[in-house]
Structures are given as structure tokens and as C-alpha cells.
Length: 147
Image (cartoon, rainbow, N blue to C red; front, side):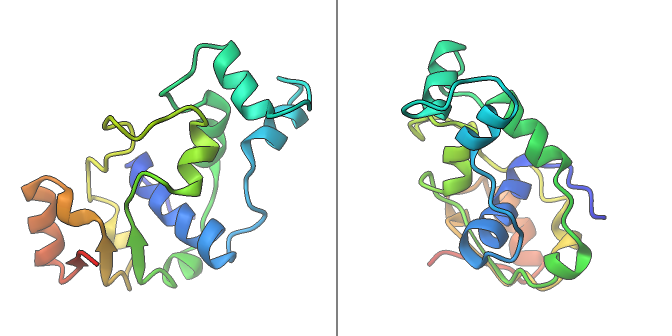
């Protein structure tokens, strides 16, 4: 199975495959996961409650990080990814950080070393706001940015 070195790039791929395409299943739901792990009661919004009670606002909840880090994605499934979206309102971000306002660099992609895992990637919408060196790497690989 493919191993990602940049957690945030992996999350963009997970967003596409799990929450957009529905091909990476089952979809992860942080609240349900926390309840299953016995970390919080199933009342109200367990993900928000757990995050708030444990001082994890504006951070990736460790249970979510562990889940997505360990999540295996087959090369065949990765080959289906042609477009990614980078924006603050992604569902995967909500399931990692229920109390996050998108006003910091928590989910900024820092490395594109994992691009070979995505052989058919043609566009990353939102990457036009990434640092110049990352945009240059995308251009050199023929990957478009922008809407």
C-alpha cells in the first residue's frame, strides 16, 4: 500500500475518495469513532464535546490523526484521482478538527514528495495560494492549479 509522507496532502486525497467520490469506504465520522473507542458519550455532538473538553481546539484530534495516518489506500484507488480541492471547508478537516476556523496553516501542504502516488492527478483547485516553490513543482509535473 502507498505510504504518504505529507499528512495534509493525504487528507486532500481522502477528501476526494472518501467524502466526494465515496470510493474509499466506510466514511470516517469522528464523533462515532470517539464513541466506539469509549472516549466520549454519545450525546449531542460527541466530536465537539471531546475536542472542547480536551483542549484540542484548532488541532488535529489525535484519534483522527491516528486513523488517517494508518488508513491504507490502494495504488489502484490512488490512480483514480484526477483532481483535488484545497479549501478550508473540507469534510475531512471537520472530522479531524471539529473546532477549527481555517485561519491558520494547520492543513497547509508542505511537501509534494507524494505526487508519484497520484499518477493521474491533473489539477489541484486552491493550490494557486500555495508557496511559489510548490506551485513550481506542480507546473513542472503538468498539474494545473486554480478553478
